[in-house]
Length: 229
Image 1 (tube, one colour):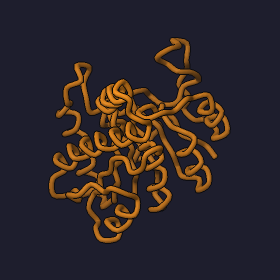
Image 2 (cartoon, one colour; image 1 turned 60 degrees about the vertical axis):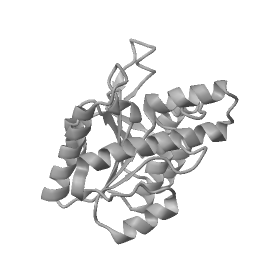
Image 3 (spheres, helix red, strand yellow; image 1 turned 120 degrees about the vertical axis):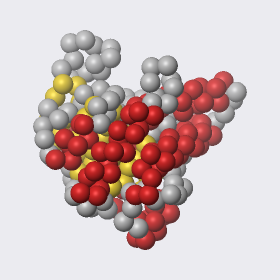
Image 4 (cartoon, one colour; image 1 turned 60 degrees about the horizontal axis):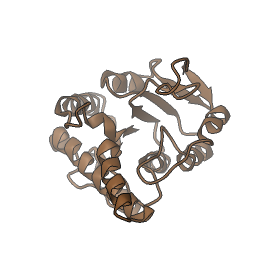
């Protein structure tokens, strides 16, 4: 049983057009493992750049942070529907609206379940962590737009180094300086961290721009950054 978090921004190219080719490649990789290795999957997709654009506009119009979070959740669900379309008949057709709805669907089907966000104030990373805990997942694979966890933000510091593994305590220290708000939950957040820590969920971060990295993470190959407990 694998839980995979896909950053919403990965679904769009630099021109903010939907990257249908990449979505198809994800679907092909998931279908291969699902059918040949009989592995179960739950996929969680974030809102990404499009969600942030809506949230920025909402803030300018006076929207509350709760309203902004709801916008992000709805965009994440739309992103999830794109992957459901690409997965075809191996995907459960309905996107869960809550954790309780996910639990009910999970009890009923062996198909791939694709989720967006659930609750205002909760990132899709936290959703993925909670689902990994609930399902006793073999691994939580977090696919993002960087190669893994760096010593510093690689987009701001060219000297930042990729870490092949990092202790959970050191990872927590990196996250504590991050500010979160609607549409802005960088790499991981403390709520998600608390969930993976209490259940010691195997967690790997990898670059999702190459769908082959998903297959490598499933196989347990050295890819990205592994969180150590």
